[in-house]
Length: 64
Length: 133
Picture 1 (tube, helix red, strand yellow):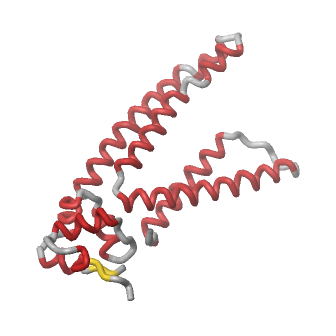
Picture 2 (cartoon, rainbow over the protein chains, first blue to last red):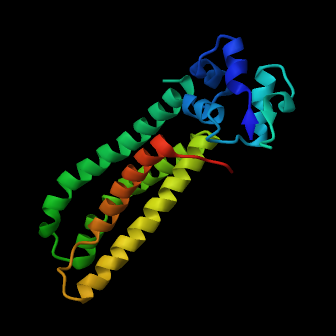
Picture 3 (cartoon, rainbow over the protein chains, first blue to last red):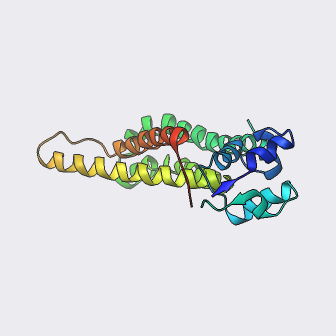
């Protein structure tokens, strides 16, 4: 699954640690999602979309 | 370090540290005095006393797993699965070698093997791990 997390985060001028604090997860987890090493669960994906005030499909995209 | 990791790491080391401290106290106070007890069940009960803080340590580890976020937990369970499989392979393999005449070694080595494999696998996963649940 692809995502726009890195760009969205940079648009807000947040570091990975800033975003991690807002999501109450580790910076390592934010990094793993941004680099495509980890696909988040649905609740975390909703939480991420919520932090940016977007819909889940605006942040995450299907691979193909 | 992010606030989340700082928070769960601090709690983990407080809980695990207390268990290790108690374990150390038992090892240095109980073990040297075991020979003073002549009755087997008394000696056995005292010998098992360090297992109480051991259980506390296991509880600290379980609680730490529950506090982890979903990515950390997924990674931790994969690491433990690989370490367990590796430990089974090595200990069973050595068991067969013992039957063939190799020297018998203590069961303490099972945990030392598991701990070493856990550490090594964890470092490999930190560098190269990929997860697609």
